[in-house]
Image: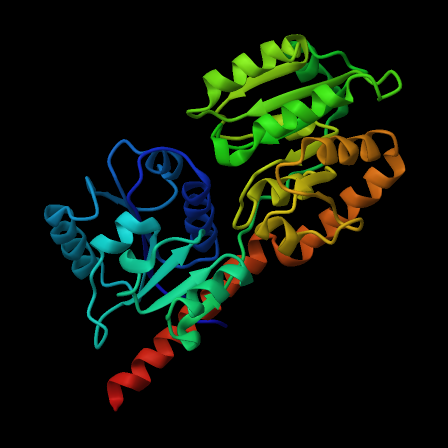
Length: 365
């Protein structure tokens, strides 16, 4: 039986986001596996609310990467808990966590983007959520022997309730026979939502009677501009802004197709979530999408920023439902094989064991 390793997980952000969602899923997954897990995060944070009652938590106000009070408090908590592993997420929490390399817990910094590494170099080991990101970390001078690839995971839902999905469509004012395109992500320029909207407008006269509707799940600084664009393109009746949702699963259940139209994605959790819900994916060819998707087998890739190419990709799947179904099933097999919770949680547990053993050997020298 594998040794259960104690770990503390630290994040400094108060709002929702991709890293924050993964933080919650991994902490809960490790706890379900029987490991001793503590979560350290700001008071009144979204992650704290999601983890309430699931694992023990300590709350620290982290006002910035140079908050000396927070740094001192984090050190106090770690000395009190004495975990074998301290894993940090994003730059603020990583910068504020300063642990000696020669003794005590092993500091693992988990990265989900191509960040400036000045806030990360002092960690003892680094995890990237794509192989491309790990290659970047090594090119930036981190020791290859302490950089590790472990992907993200998403929860895999049960079977779709067709009647429930139909009722949800009706509640949103979407006809039952409509073809629903779903986009999940922050309403930010990097997400390329405007590319999707232009693609949908371009498709209006070419879908042979298909009533195409778009559901946008997310919130962010581009909301006002996107709302104006929807109006100027004449799409008001066919685009629904759902806002940020703590659980987007009900929206995947009403979708026929999922689009990731980003200008850049390190990974692309939306792709994994779509696969988990057995939905076909059309994605722009960002680094993350290229690493995940086998074009024409598990998804459909189009050039970044090209609305007409995206429109052609959408039309290909809308007009060829059997092809779309094959893509969806291949994606589902992929997520079940490589990105289900048990696989990723086990990979982290295995890594923690390796790092602790290396630390012990080094201490004996």
